[in-house]
Image 1 (cartoon, rainbow, N blue to C red):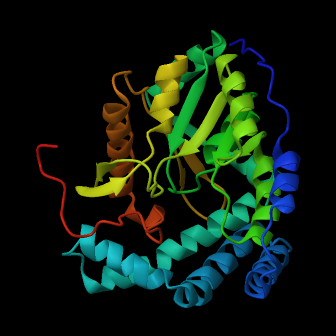
Image 2 (cartoon, one colour):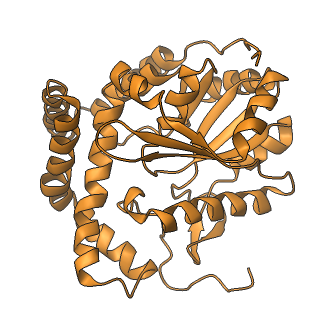
Length: 320
């Protein structure tokens, strides 16, 4: 297959960092201290062999960070709402397994070239894979949509290893000290990476997409300015921006998921068929339903530590 080589947008990673620094709030001792601890854990773990590295960071995240940060309680609360009949033993297991998966994801991302080399060997499944290749070959831009599932950077790592130019849109972390080096880490997987609040970067990315580029986005984050959509039968505010861009610029909208199989660096990349163009609302609900299906099949690999549902009072009606 011959792939086009669209002109990539200018590297906005450094520019975004300078802009953030220029408008940075006053020094926060708490944020700085948390960053030092986390950075020390990451750098120390990188000295360990791969399997030991993942297990060590997973254990530290689930046994130390999760209780202090309240993640274990959040996992319990979310599971109680979505799976009220889940046995207590399974709930307790998820309270450990879910944060451990988050920790493993973090250290994989910080492992740079080693992670990419392992991810490049991932088995690719799904009816959408040949459709995606054909779209890129003819120069059509593509938006890849995933969630905080498995390792959410597996799609970028796999496609970059196969010669595709894949950009990433991300929401900056609240801890600006940690965010500075986290941004550099995700940029090692593929570039460019664009903060969601960087207007110039987004404009460059739109031009990139219109010339046949690929953009990865995550959909499972609460977005207060958007409407509520159903996710696990509960109202969850979800950004329609992926569907909006696909419709406006004639882009393919493809759900894609990277799943971890073990701690030895074995993964799968599942590519679903493109979402048919209709309305932003219908397309966004399809994306939510697609992710829900993946989470139901592998609940231990989704980030139940997120505040995904801010409205906890009433389920979505069955006919919506």
